[in-house]
Image (cartoon, rainbow, N blue to C red; front, side, top):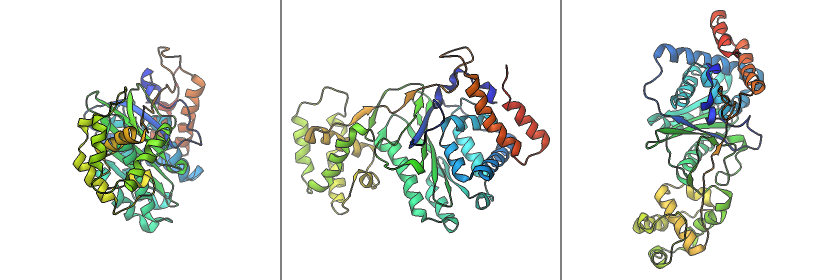
Length: 377
């Protein structure tokens, strides 16, 4: 329940997302085993549908996308549905409940759901294409956004979390939100990424805003603003390196003194594989870093190897700044890191309580939900 929020709300964004946000949030969540029991999931799907319908009727489907892209609202939404507030399973279960709950109502609400966890995430393009007749835009635009958001968070931003969940929410007009999650098997934590399509102007330059988690480290961050020269240099390689010349350039890298900073070791680079990739790119010229990143074969190791060459040969280093920031949404019940802001807390509750009051659910069930939403003294 919402009133159970405690000091572990370190995961949430430090406020309602700003209009300029592109990727609007990230969360750290402990990995929990098991799954929601069928009796609970069925109710979650129904309540998720009714709350979504209330928001869409009052404000339109774009407003639901905006709220789903806000990690603060998303986390509160999951708690209202009755799931563990601090579990990594909240992400996959909330998205799954929405997908199940909106089934057969998508056309009426104008809000569609594609993708999911594990293998289901790979079906996102086919899920989008299946709704093609209901869209006012070419489905390929949404498919490209889905693939790029996943590619950026797994290849251009390498922060130690492997993506295993990817869900896209989209409207008839082509607006979209992506919620995806990665796992760090060593720390046993998951990190959640939120994207708001209407605010994305460049997939490859500072797509993140208000990204929050409980810790920060170093991340291979090619989408940082300070990595612009590296992105340009990597793109230039595809135009200037003739077939067979990469090995010669890399031999120069091996004999040069490496920078005095954490970076990629020369032993991490498979010269033959990178050479074959660049030779193949000659047949498919790229215009910018985003189009290069989208190519098959532009994976983690290839990207890091090209970044190493960009640093040594072109003098264009890549940023290792982790885009996550440390922040709390409401504070903690024990006063750490600061006392709970009751005004902000009650505003969050009223936001969801208003939606439930307008929802078309039974009086008893509505009363139960509203009782969970009321703040405790």
